[in-house]
Length: 568
Image 1 (cartoon, rainbow, N blue to C red):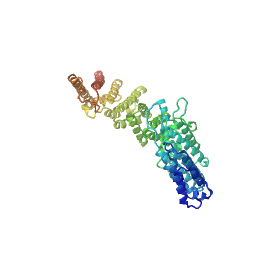
Image 2 (spheres, helix red, strand yellow):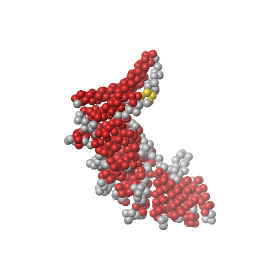
Image 3 (cartoon, rainbow, N blue to C red):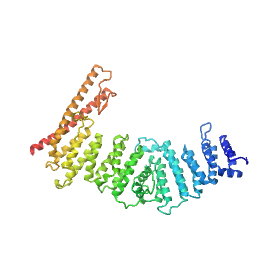
Image 4 (cartoon, one colour):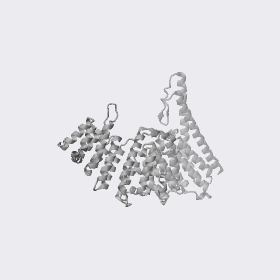
């Protein structure tokens, strides 16, 4: 076969692989007279070897003999072929790999090719790293299982998690073997840039979707890989804050870092405290918070339980850094804050995992309380108009009530109270709090949380502010006409309506005791037609209890108002 052409040689190799004659293929490849053919035909040989590397036997298992043969031949090509020509082919095969077996097999010959590139070595390495990145971008991630605490240990047994862990063992090795060839000498070197971009990418998808908490002093495989990668990052740059320079749109980007990977790095360093002792402690707390907040939002906007949990933990950690300081209202001009609480609201309101919703509420409270009074007021004033969820509106009103309480409790003289809990500013908020969208026809069950919070705030003011320092007594006549009257009518109408529904259910049951009622009951805008008669009755009676609570609170408030008016 020594006289065959290059194309005949390539066809011979492919035929031998197809027929499983691996020893003949290896002998053909390694024959001295074919060395030139191997060197000159990498463009044709690499895709053929890649294609036939993963073939299956009749029993459904991968043909190990063919796989090992292709692996050996690919490494031979990497050793002797024209590296600049073979590089592009190996990069293409890495990017287009459709399974981990083929992808991992390609890493070693790719590394060998990169070490042999004589010119433009750095840009070649960047191309190689980018090919790996492109493969990871499409990598499947584990599904959210809504597990909490130690239950998350079960995630380590999922096939997706095991595949990711195996993959990262090879990726870490791939990087470590390459990086030793290119020591970083200049802190602004192109080498540093390329390595950092790759390492930050590895910290993103799919690794960020794995839980890395330590339980019972045991580190899982994902944790070990994360620690290795973060340590590698710190060998190049010990200051994570310096990596945030790329966020400034007014400057040239030093690095093109993966946002999700950078957010993951911050979580691992500042929450899991990997390499935390090596970080500089010179940054002012508010500066650090403001410039890191967008990373929290990136995690919160990722639709996966583990990543969202990391985002909430990072948010709380950043807020703890400023617990002895107060944020200025001027920071609210930043889009980062708007995007942050929009993402936070989605978690608090819509997330299926109870623990994440509760954590979201804690972050929300801590975030609001981190602002000085003006910032707190501006947030409440704007958020109360945007929030449509009654429970969250009610909680926000309660937080404002707590601010009013603190002002009364901490000021020696009431005239020293903040302007943001009295006068026109208080009235502006009360008009938003005391709002019934359809007046007496509003759905009071739907709005019950915010109504209860509002009535509690007003009752507190009526009892605490007998001297009218907040001007609340000037506002009660306004609220009587715009709110109390409509609320009173709404309670009476709603109670009568629900009692009528109960009577209809009872009457229907007495006439057709063994047949489900066709009485249509709607609560909070949702039909209860699919519920049993007993369940419908429970819902209706529960609603009547809510009306009783609203009635009681309103009556107690009006009593306080009447008593104070008589005294004055």
